[in-house]
Image 1: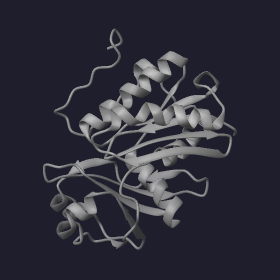
Image 2 (image 1 turned 90 degrees about the vertical axis):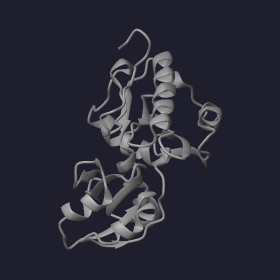
Image 3 (image 1 turned 180 degrees about the vertical axis):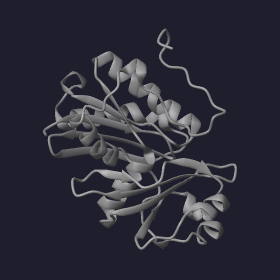
Image 4 (image 1 turned 60 degrees about the vertical axis):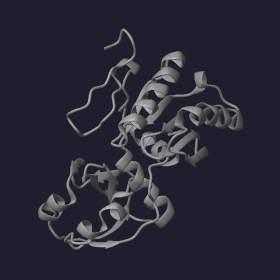
Amino acid sequence: MSAKILALDTATENCSVALLVNDQVYFRSEVAPRDHTKKILPMVDEVLKEAGVTLAELDALAFGRGPGSFTGVRIGIGIAQGLAFGADLPMIAVSTLEAMAQGSYRVNGATNVAAAIDARMSEVYWGRYSRQESGEWLAVDAECVIPPANLVEQIVADESQWTTAGTGWEAYADQLDSLALSCKQGDILYPDAQDIVQVAKFMLAKGETVAVEESSPVYLRDNVTWKKLPGRE
């Protein structure tokens, strides 16, 4: 399926934008933890100009829905909602953990990925994914926020080798090294829009889009709140 999808993500320290036009991807990415609001819109303009398309010509707008930094997720979805609303585009909400699995496949060829983002407060955002023949990812565990020590108690050993992804593996190395899994270190620390757009391509083909006013982030922690666009709560 040919598609034109714009993706953006600011859920972690990485700020990124990608544009899929048929099978070609235009992207910008920079680790800039305090400059997301300054960099994200110029990145959008750059990839649109490079590809020679406008927002109105797109099929959908994808965004990293979290989990991740509370502020970062809010920034990303707010900007995505504004762009999609103005161009009357459907939205596609992509898990940042699944995006890191896709990134691990892009960089390492990994087909089994254990993703852990440092969630602070002595916890990690956790999810495991296996790549299917179609190129889609199957969630092996339901994504969650959990103390590493509890994760060690819950994970059951299997015969697969898992490639690690995310900042949680270094932040909680002592605990996560005790997991009953065969793991090898991967190179992906953060989600990236160039991987979000690849996941979004499959979701668009299956009709898994949401209207702007229905799009929402995933924080995994229950003690946070979110307001949608003004007048659209």
